[in-house]
Length: 489
Image 1 (cartoon, rainbow, N blue to C red):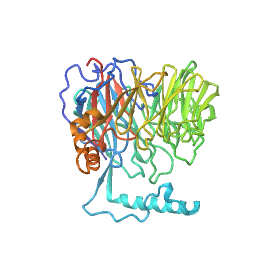
Image 2 (spheres, helix red, strand yellow):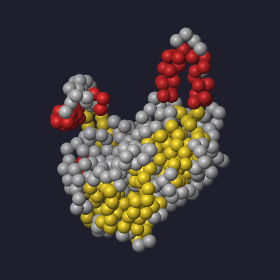
Image 3 (cartoon, rainbow, N blue to C red):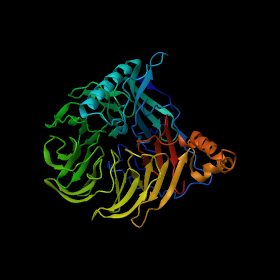
Image 4 (cartoon, rainbow, N blue to C red):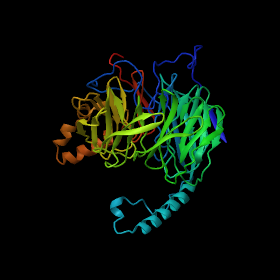
């Protein structure tokens, strides 16, 4: 049963939906065009104040994330911020027994045969499924005021366990919110009130599967990847079509809309390495190509398609596309990531993989520059761009100039528990790190101070920022924080 809660917030006669307080929205996964690029907006700052930048607001309500709430990214539409959380709450006070089958990283699987490891994984999955009975699970969609972070409404419904929390970002289209919930439930809510409009159970087996796709809406059809592609009537939720190919491998990539000269088409990575172009109203494939793409979201720029693989061999690939065919143009094989998606600005592709960050010519596939990031195992977080700048949120917020000349970092911010955004030198001064380091056993003490005050805070790993009207919205550990990045606020 759905529990629908409304928090009273003063709404003026003009209404939040009749006059948006922001000029350009970021209303779905990867922004208005699902390519990671913000629409035209104000000039953004190129440095932080000496004492750091305080948030305009931090959401007033606790919003669980990661294992207790998932990794969905915030979206912004018509004066409101929306975030989805797949919430896990412990039942009772007792401690869970120690695991018999903990996760084994690759280095601890040495000596196991493929059959032995497969059996171990089956046991681990069953153990986790039984342990999950000690929790209750809910899905919550939060609606926040874009100017204050106050909760306008939240929609709560009972949910189920999945091996990883459900984490698809909402899409807000024509006053409706579309989101893929757990247990293969596609959902639609009223963006104004949070009321349920429809829920459609998508065909397919389910025990504890997680499917992280974000729904794309085009010409009245909601297209979602839930194991395979489905097209739903956006108004009623009725299933219009489903793809004939039903692969066993889970795909967490999200579909994108290509506005071709002959009409809108949908492009999506499917069944572990293929990319298809389908008609939104029928699901009929116009073409299929072996791209070796992973869980990243495809990027369409004009008549160019970019896909990104999870190994350097698969690489970043560029294709020339038409409604009736596709041709590979180039492959860049010096970068790879399990799910990060690139951005394109002024004819150049900015791509992150492992600790590498590169600028690649969209025309030739040749690298203009490459930089190494001082980060620990960055994965899955996607790049975003606005005002000729590219943003990457992992262990902080990196902003660099979208230029092919060289890697030019502008902001390299860290965060404390109060969500202050500041450069490392500012936090070193605030925390008196230099003084601590000069004391006996100072390096170890300074490291502890740094980790407690700064190191364990910041944007949620694997979530991506939303950028709208010069503001950046970051999902933090248990909140959403908004910062004004305008050069002249």
